[in-house]
Length: 393
Ligand code: SF4
Image (tube, helix red, strand yellow):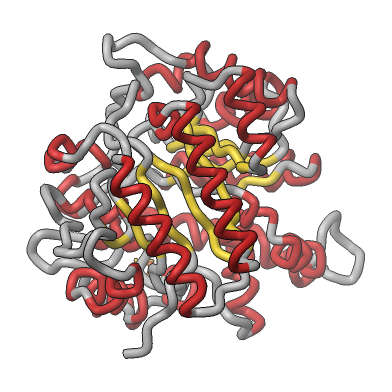
């Protein structure tokens, strides 16, 4: 099995959070409490050394570093600036561009943080779930209080200083999607965002998401798309459906390629896989003793990688297999069959794909100027790739 060279690294600046969001996958694994609260100085130094060797060994021209938590801003400004300076020095020595993005709940953002982000060209991704009535159901602080107003203040502070954050929401299937989209567009003034499927595994038996996404798609397709509003989930799906029609390469069939470094220097597969339970992403690797690329030989990582290169058994006859490829990897997990399952949301996904397909196919057939947006318009969405500008949760 040929494996990729890691070019996307998720660095945990903090293993703790200042919020207590009800759906957070990170704290489902109690082993995170045994990790240092923030990235230790020793682990940071060892990581930077490993990173430089990795870039040189594989002659990387560019790579992505996702600064993550917990809440990454708990790392503190002085340590953050020191890390950025060290990354700049690696760039100067190697010629490799290290793209940096931070995923934050925005509660701690202030003018000084924004100056730091600007100075070091750090892209900012903010998690906000909708208006206060939606957001505050799940995104609460350690005292159980809603955080919407503090998050909104952080977003306004960013935008006032010309930093346009990517915005990620998690779908609350019990809420009205119209309220959330209207809030994002009209109150927060956003033109691009994503509304993510809640993370869940088969053992969780999550509620249905299809009614929410069917309503959301119609809203977007009939109203907001024409206003230039980008919702990554739908752009990705439309692109995949068009690609399957045109036999182009599909975009959902991508192997998992993110490497995670924890606050003690532990090297693990992409962190969302820890949704499978305690120590489910644990390896014996650490930046103090191992090269970054050694993760590719780890049995746990290889199991996840292989799973994203092969269809689950049930999916092999599915009419949407080239679009969906079994769904998002963590959603395939069950304690009984591991990754050899269709997505826990499979029946919802089938409804969503059918609905989108039925909606877009008349537009594709009317491509020669009879409709407001044709197949060419839709392909333009794919080519412009606005969904790629958004970060990870
Ligand atoms: S998860 Fe469901 S919709 Fe997706 S490929 Fe498998 S069977 Fe098809």
